[in-house]
Each structure stands twice: as structure tokens, then as C-alpha cells.
Image 1 (tube, rainbow, N blue to C red):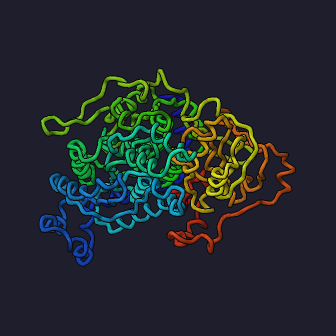
Image 2: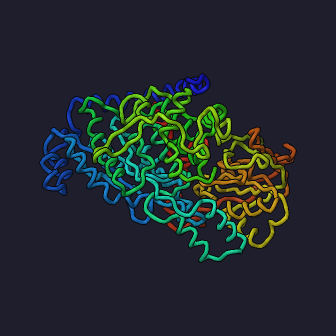
Length: 615
């Protein structure tokens, strides 16, 4: 094992000892009770149980009425508006049949909301996006609170949905849980062409019809978007954490192999309940080693910056305290091994065809950069994830992948990486601490020193661009009052095309914000998730137009070049919308979330560390 990675893992374990101990005691107590009493529904009163199977099919009702077969909960994020989640329409029937064949009985226990950041980008609805993660966690808990179940099948793919499902499932940590992916859509319009069309539209050189045509050719069918944003980062992380079946991550929807893997997930859920020989509770599976493995995979693949929030929150749900310092230290020893858009021109289908997760995981294991001795839903040991699935005469089989990358422009070995360190850096200084994704930024843009251009709303920056007010000058765009306590920490990805235009014109520009830029952040240098946020007294609220800002993403520094005594004399300017102003698109329903939201470094959620309440 790489000694630095082992040291960081040990440090996380020691820091988390008290809360993790409390958490494990809880789930082990529940697990022992489950082993002793048989299927969970067996202990329900007759009226309770009758309510639980009243609507069941004639085929399943006898099994649910009896107490021999384990029950499996299906928690789904299906809707037919989102391409990534549309394939889930048929999954419940497929999973019920598979579970039934394996000797269990499955029910759809509940649904969770699934919103699309691509639809809400730059709109008021985006201000609910991050909050939706915690709503999804609570909805998952409501689904499982019926206490009818012995395992969980989690149907979710995108952005906040996967972290929310896992957070909720970890609060029922004695239950096994398997994520069942839907896979990416097939490759459409090349990402380079799409990005160029967006810039041309921002410059007024093409119209809405041309832009919409390009977008529709890119996002064209069921499945996840094919760029490597948060959705596909989610999928990679679930596989390397051992929560997917091996090789199931990037198989396209509505294919024979996809359906075979879905059925296999249902069968496997039965096998790993407390009533079989391979009991694998999700709270034991998600330990410090699994969390570090997820961090390593994120860094090696140049994944979404959103996971600097989500990984902290997911770890906390398992009683584990992960910090940005841990990610920063890991980034120094984990090389960048992939070039997937926006960090390159390939998409996730190209990555899969180059060897995908099996080659990546195998190489990282061989180099001691991943913990091998972990629990997974496929069995003990991450070595299971060297194998890829295929159909042989209609039967699903797994075979170990022994070769290397089939395309070194997309996937490289640790011995010949694209870069020596991970694609995500932490920066800090007199403005606070922030995250900087450097994997898609040219080396000459990693350092910028320029006057601040202050905006308290992303729309103000867009208006300034359209009016030509940003032309011909270097600047650092400071977009503040965008943090979790201000307005839900929306993604500001809509700012990327206009700022990329200015960058291409030779201007030196960057972004500093207490908001987010998403997994689709591209070539514009940025310091995001700035903490403390302006709304909580962060120094970003003291900045004025023209203040010199220095962002050095390579060295990890972010400074306002303003004398400390001058900053100390200033009063904050601007402010977040009041509750009376923050209305429309349902935002008023989430006013309590604004008051409860934690700092970005704590995961920007409303929940604390599971188990810490008992210290």
C-alpha cells in the first residue's frame, strides 16, 4: 500500500474513532437482531403486516404474508423527463422477477425526487439542487422506515441523487444496499463541437436554433449525459466503493447486457442479506478504506468538484470525518490517468472502450493506490472489480481484464500518467479556503493576478458580458452570496461559456466564488466552494471592485492583495436575498434549509456526523 495513502487512511480512522464506534455499535446491534429474528417483516403486528402486503400481486402476497423469504426494498428515482433516470421505468418489474427467482420478494418501497441540473442551470430551480440531496436522503429513510426489508436496491444516477440515496441508506446501515445503474446514452455530437457552439452563441455568432440543435444532438437519448460531470463521477465512485456489481457502471441502457446486470443485482441483493452466508451490511462496507478509495478514484479520473462536498457528506453518514485537507494530501500522490470531457475530448463511452473501470482499478490496485482489503457487494476484496461482464450464450459471466488501456489518449497507466497529481487542488489564503479543479486548465492559466470584478448575482455578470463591459481587460470575477446559507449554493456553470470566450480572446480571467461550478467546469481557472461564505461573514464580502486578487492554483494560494488593516476597516457589502425575496419556484419551502446548512467544508448539508451526537 502506498505509505501516504495508508497514513491518510489511518488519520481519518483515528479522527473518526468516536463517531464511527457509535455508528458501528448501532448497526451491529440491528444486524444481530436481524439475524436472529428472520425477515424483518416477521416481527410486525398483523395489522401492520397486512397493510404492507395489501397491494401486492397474487404471486408475491403469499411470500410477503409468510416469514421465510427475505424482503428487498426498491428505492427509485424514476421519472421520464430525465434521460438518466428514464430507463428505470422497467427496472422494478425486472428486479422483482430476479429477486423472486433468487428466493426473496421485492417491493418498491418509495420514490425520491430527481432534478436535473442541466434543465435548471442558471434558473431559480438550481438554488434547490444541493438541498435536494438531503431531501433525497430523508425520502430514502421514509421508504425504509416501514421496517419491512432485509436489503435495498437503490436506483439513482445523477448529481445529488446518488449521494442522497447513499446517505439515507447508511442511516439503515445494517441493511445491505446495491446501486443499480442505468448507464450512459450512446455518444452523440462530440463535446468539442458542443462547447464551441456554446461559445459562438455567447458571442452572438450563431442563433438559438443552431445552439438548440447542437445541444439536442449531444443529449439525444435515454441514459446519462456522456461528459464526465457529477453524474458519471457518481457512477465511477460507486463502482470503486464496491456498491455496483463489477463492470456495470458504463453499460448503455436498453441493451441485453444492461438487462442481465440489472437482474444480477436483484439476485445478489438476496444473497447478501443477514439470512444468507454472505451478509454485507452497507454500513460495514462503507468504511474509511472505501471512502479513501472513492477519493483516489475521483482524483485519478479528474472527477466532479461537487464530490468535495458529497464525499464529506457521505462519509459523515457512516460516522467518518473526511476533510478537504485529506483530499489535498491525496491529490499530491494520486496521478491523473484519464482525459474525459471536460478534461479532454473523449466521453465515458470512449473511456469504457479503452478499458474503463476494470483497467483503471486494476492498475491502481497494482500500484498500491487503492485499498484491496475491503468489503464489496460482489464479495470481499476489490479484486472482483478487475473483471468485466459479458454475455456467453445468454448467460452473464465475468472475466478478469488483464490487458492495459486500448487508447492511451483516454486512459493511461500510473507509470505514464497525464499529470503527476490529481486534478483537484485546495487553495487557501486571506479569503478563506476553496477548491480548484485544474485538470482542464492550461498550465499558463493556473496563476492569475488581476483586479476584482464584483457580482452578487450570476445574472449581473452575464449582463455585463453582453453589454461588452468585460471586453479587453483582465479580471477575477468574484461571485458572492452563492453559498449554502445564502441561496442553496447553485452551480454557476452558465458562466463558463462567456468567460471562456474572453479567455480565448487573450484576456486573463478567473472566477472566485462561494458557489459551485459543477462537474462540467472547464478551462476557466476557478476557486469555488469558498469557505467561509459571504453570508457567514467570509472575507469575500469585504472585497471591492478593483481589489487585486491573486489565484495560484498550482501553489494552492488565494489572496486578496489588500493590506490587512484596510480589510479590517471595511464593512461587508451586498447580501443574500431575504426570505421575503427568496420566493418562487418553491424556494420559500426551503427557507429552513438556508438556516441549517453547514459550511462547504462540512459537506454543505443539514446533517451532522452520524454517531457524533452521542459524544
